[in-house]
Figure 1 (tube, rainbow, N blue to C red):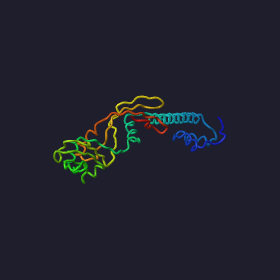
Figure 2 (cartoon, one colour):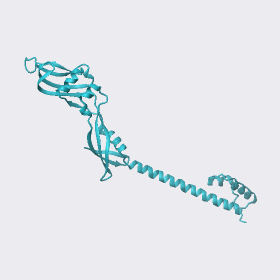
Figure 3 (cartoon, rainbow, N blue to C red):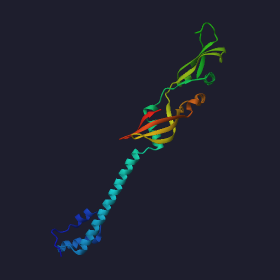
Length: 237
């Protein structure tokens, strides 16, 4: 029988192996008293070491797989992620929006109390010339307006001198409605095709109905580039 150079410390060995094997514990304690390592203990230790190594290898494979997955997920680009990247870019911050109106659209805003006509003598003493102005109610939603016309009577335009124009008081944000296509580009880029419109949801329905054409869906195209910290907008057309 082989003599042990040092007694086998059961608590230490079991801790190193990461096992709680009652049979191995008993064998080690008996061998310590005898001062020798039995064949049964050697077999048990060998099996325990093999199991421990197998567990370590399994954990390593799981860890490497997780790291590989994280790397792939951060570099991959889905349509939802592309939408999020575009909407959080500098190009999609809220913007001041000016709108050219038709006279019938201006008339609708006048009827709803957001704009008004003001008699203007700019073109002489004729009382038939009127300028388009913002009403007290409309000052919350419009920062500026323009429009000048000669009228047959108040509210009935005969000659348009300056077409109606309004500037919204609160900047509005462009919103991506949907990403319709993704394609690989050169040098770690993706070509993105998408649809967008102006988000007018904060305006009263009466104003939205008049300027509804501004909420029509438009087509957009852009390039996104992959950096070390993720995807960024390279350019938008």
